[in-house]
Length: 90
Image (tube, rainbow, N blue to C red):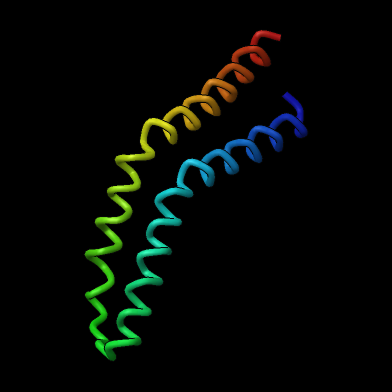
């Protein structure tokens, strides 16, 4: 296994993890933005107000996107282990 293959595998792995985590990150970002707009409009400056809606949104996105995210992670795992096995034999 040469350096180019390792760099390619790492690049694919990081990209796949970011892609798999994106629904949860985006939902947390959107809910956080909505809560901050609500806080600015009502002048409620409670720091703990943001946590519960964000947690609910992230968990909901996780439940909805789990099969899709799992397929992405399994795909990259198969690629990595397949490459390691093939390169280990040669």
